[in-house]
Image 1: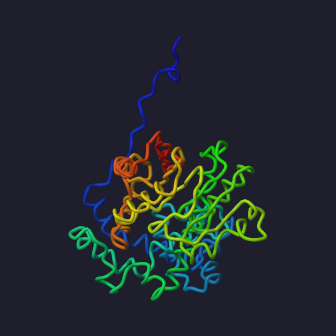
Image 2 (image 1 turned 135 degrees about the horizontal axis):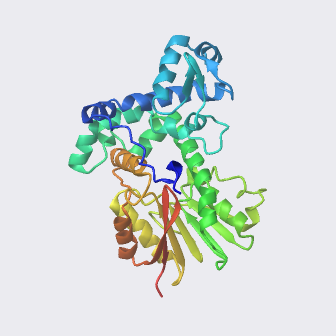
Image 3 (image 1 turned 180 degrees about the horizontal axis):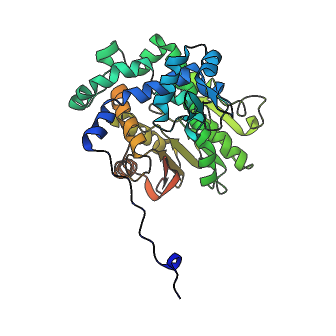
Length: 352
């Protein structure tokens, strides 16, 4: 006998989508939640809030603000799942708000600051100009290119950039190391590898492997301590200052190119050409990038794509555009693998 509970139940009704006008208004005011996240990160509210709920007055005393404006800030953030308000004027953590803490694994605090730095608020209103010309807007705004401006005129922002990139690299390093099997290689070169967090993770995974980190002199000067003299991996690591757009002065069995093929097309072509010039036939080349298609993180990657257009005239790749770049360079593409929801790895070799 079939009981009521055995019968197929109708699907639960989904709440109606907000009207189009309301959705568009929320997008138009999109600067507000970004600014609110920045304010919370700068004030250190997430670090001040412990495991139990706290009142706005208690939090205000901890971060040295006025209670009422702080409550307004936090209430705005609760609309996006950043903090929650279990009782009136009392706030508690959510999974997202914990990511604004400095002591949380995979913290996004420095990245949230980087993406809302003062120069970004000057650049975004010129997006139509960048779309029209296909060029960055930094010469128009500041009379110099992005990285020159960053290191000459916005050194605090440059430091935040370095911290954000370090955080991002550390978080993805373990995912990359888990994906890549380099047991058949004796040497690996991380090209444009920043401070070498990915290289260090690969060397820790493969005790037989020797590795070389190549990046600009100012970048490798702050290389991961594990790779430097006295570090546990120093006897298997070489740190080489250089610009991969000019030349790649290292020969290896495997080359790793992660998140650096986002500049203008000519810089990307030069980098891939330099890899081809440096590598032996049969060498493995793994290109790892965010994609603006075929990804569950489309809102994030397309936003970063537009920010790249504004600041350096660069672009995130689609799967097809990156396939074109590597094959035009002469590489043989074998497979495309998902590293994590944000990154894809293009497995290539240098032809014989």
